[in-house]
Length: 166
Ligand code: PNS
Image (tube, rainbow, N blue to C red; front, side, top):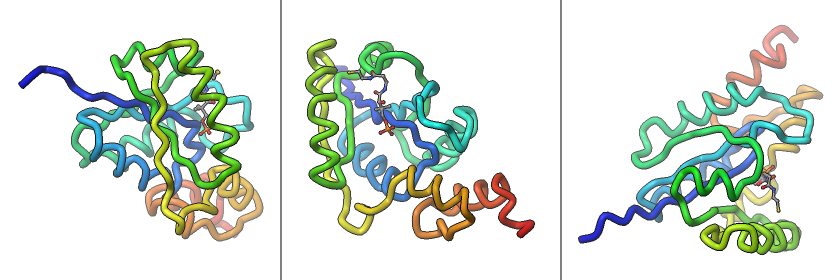
């Protein structure tokens, strides 16, 4: 038996983490010995949650999942992958549009760091309409996000967006 630990990074903005993300995290954690969830700190998108909030929510959600850890990162994904000792990037694909967007990114990341191979996981069809952007839009206009996010994230956003006051 060698000492090799198959480590993957599951990167994203996770603003906020959705039910779809959690399904992918569970499935990726079952494939790899170690799964590092990488939360991008400096997203160009207008954030709903701070990076600390996003990391905290993910830590709570994964606390009983062996082999998982949550870290934030800044800068290039391939450098973060290197810093964790991982050699695989896991990304979820909901649709052909996702694949069109993700393929050149995966190829660019491989060009930058040939240790950083990307593995695509097909999301379950029941989650294919879920996105953090949709959750953000719904949260801003007080739409019902119950079916989109884990219970703890729902509670957190309810308080953050003052839903309880309305
Ligand atoms: O959840 P998202 O917003 O779809 O995640 C996108 C993410 C974080 C994977 C991507 O934006 C990223 O890797 N950003 C870090 C900067 C980088 O390395 N970009 C790719 C250069 S080719």
